[in-house]
Length: 109
Image (tube, rainbow, N blue to C red; front, side, top):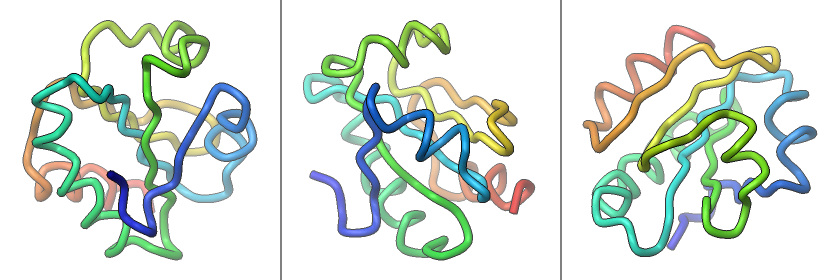
């Protein structure tokens, strides 16, 4: 499950927490049953801790939040999106390394 710094994004809070954020936001689209999602989870949790106060890092469960998933055309998971000023700046589809995610996130701080 998510670490203490990992935010939980939902259909209800996505607009406020992500699109209207004054900081870069990393969103991990995942599901409980997804093996590669579980592989990425520790990296996402570590980044949430490392970037605390500089960026928002959170997860959105696609099984429970179909609206956001459809809005951003998420077709496979894990998908990681980095938002800045309400716009998608980066997209990573599939399992990847913490270093790769950090490099992309760093560009938008």
